[in-house]
Image 1 (cartoon, rainbow, N blue to C red):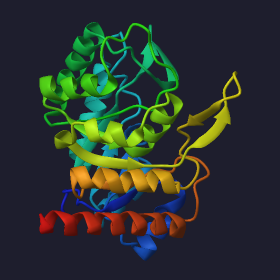
Image 2 (cartoon, rainbow, N blue to C red):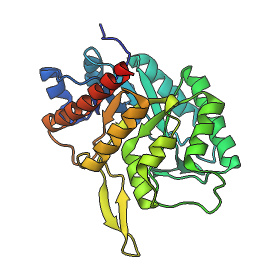
Image 3 (cartoon, one colour):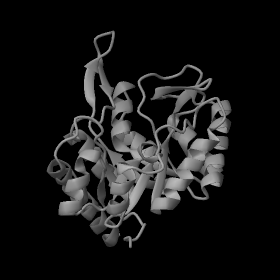
Image 4 (cartoon, rainbow, N blue to C red):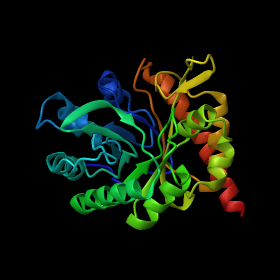
Length: 286
């Protein structure tokens, strides 16, 4: 027996192995749990044992990190088939991947690397998104990147590029608010203006996370999307602004490094849910 597969307009967390037992024992009130697809591509073992039990209690979304949608090589058909098997096995409510590339000449680079925004790369990414959706038999969400460089070759803005992908392929979008904050601060842009221009009608999920601040070679601040610390207040404020445009949307608290006790993540989901409730009230009043 499983709960509904639908992902609610509520807050959830990324499921980590150190929290398996506590989640099963205490059943905290998360709206959903999200897992990285590549951690569950084996045929069995403890990951599937625990995820199967947890799926009886919570809806699950699947987040890919290694499909290399923007890569120059053809998509790995074996990887796509494993994704489809996972989505079917756990009746995942959402599937998302990154607007990035991470493979070249058969090598996996273990990073999410940026793309120039040109007509050539647009056509290439759209072909890969369409192939992914056709193989999986479902709509996917594509996540906006966090970036640290901009390409001189780019002939369109990131927002125009992402919007055109959604229009051409019918895919949805995962709006990572922390990525917006990181990229805009790195490139001296206004994060709120980015959100105001974003094609929010396609947004099916929001991500929130922490980031690190360092200095670049010129001694200027450089933000790094690290997922190793709590969401900071300016990102919470940007999230509140985002919800005025999107309305309530499933929201994930991402924490992939320095993973804290479950109670700390629960507290962040409570804060996200308070924002979501205010958004619902605003929507009802319109």
